[in-house]
Image (cartoon, rainbow, N blue to C red; front, side, top):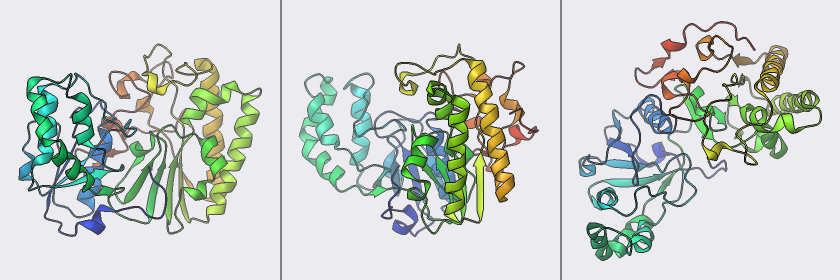
Amino acid sequence: METNNNLVYFTDLEKDKSLKIGIAALVGKLSPKLSSHKSGWAFHLANQLKHAGYTDVQVITDTETDWSTFDVMLLEHGMEFKGNFNIFGGANDDLYHQITRMFAHDVKLYSLHHDMPCVGTLIEKRLKTGSELFKTLESRIDEAKKICSQIPRVDRIEKTFCLCFGDSHSFSQYTPGFQTDRHDGLTLFGTLRRGIRTYVPEYIQSLRIYLGNIDIRHHLMRQDNPSKSLKTMMANYEQQLIDLEIEHIEVVQALPIENESRPLPKTGYYKDTPFFGTWAERTELVKEFNRLVREMCTRNGWKTWKHSDVFLNSFGELTFDVMEKPKSVHIAREFYRWDLVNDEPNKKLIKVTQALF
């Protein structure tokens, strides 16, 4: 995600709150499942739109919906998008139907969080291997290139004084009123090395920060003295937060560690491993990390968020029941802090007690 001062906010571009707005993937589709974290990003954006005053917002989870019935379509390219489309199934008839939706001239298109990739180039590269129907798109390559070149980029929904910032886990802590700034793969160590201030605009009055899970999963146990390295990092963390001079700060504690049998996608690997250190070693780091978070929050009058006991199984592990299915390190949308279906604090987390860590 972008963090400079030139961010484009949707509310600055579209003032009419009665617009019919869709959020959809141009290539592929967004999952409607509550167990999905990847599509949770789109559903949380829809919630931001609703709380910004837009009255007709829909996340589109199929490839059949007629885009021409919408005033605006926000194109969500996926959490793992790196600038190029990932095509599953090849240049088949289904991809043809997905792409042709962008030719609905009555709908205004925006590209979310990324400059719009060129669909015309995608068509060119796939023509030789495409289905007969897909090959008919050859006549529309120039049209597709022109349309894509004119699609504006939108970085965030609404500029507010509250920021929820962190890695790919962070937006699971979203609540209405917060902007969200998600940086996939971002470590706490890397954030501190660059400087938290470089991510947090001067105007922010309330900061919710969620980092550290990746450090615990991959990096701290690689150090000669993991506990000492953690303490040094946390002292730096506290000082940099103090230096922000923000009145309202909330630090989210680290997640429990799941059972090592859980299959994880290669996108979550580091140096060809899904984690480094045993479950017991990393669990001790979670306990120490969360203790240090609680202590620094107490010293400075900040808040801290403790994950619900429903996240734990009888062995003290992060239960697979609350995690994204079929495999991921993330929490499923169903167990986010904010219930995006009923638009209220998540009642499934009401059994929150003092965290074990």
